[in-house]
Length: 233
Image (tube, rainbow, N blue to C red):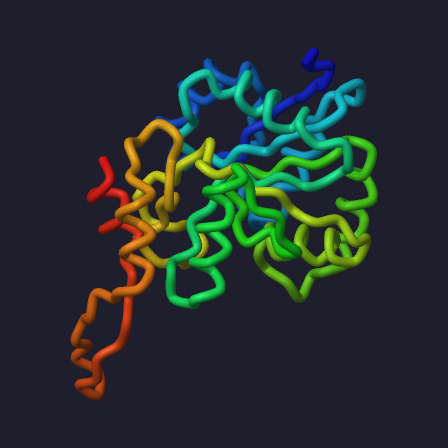
């Protein structure tokens, strides 16, 4: 099938992670929106404003993204599979703390993607160019929401646009500290450049790694994403 989808890219980056940016620029051939100390939404919206007006889709990639091999071709091939307009998130790394999250991922393994109402992450978002200006206008009004991906998710929900996640993920997350106070261990469940045994994962879905927490001395079920990624390498 001929691929006629055109996609532009930009990068949003913080000076403390400037050493990651040259590689991203080399792969993406994309301009950079640098953090200038005015908040993450300021950096994010300027990255979206770097889109090519003649493209069908635009993706904003954050500085701590690990891109798969042959990244741009893989993204183009994936987006071209869908006739309807969706938003795209190239990373899926929600921890398996809820049964429905795990079941959703297992279904995604079978069909090659997950379709969800929520964006969930901010590391590698794509959307149709035609809605970018409306998205920015909408998100500018959400001053009570600090996170950029939460603002964008609010917009997508307001216009009824769902998000597609490729499974396996085309982007992984560097295990550096979050600049917005997030927790460590943010890695893809299944990154396309890593080896993976889906049968092991299916068996793992019915078991739990029990971890005793010091707080109140109770045990809880916890499926470590880092454990999964290391196990399947």
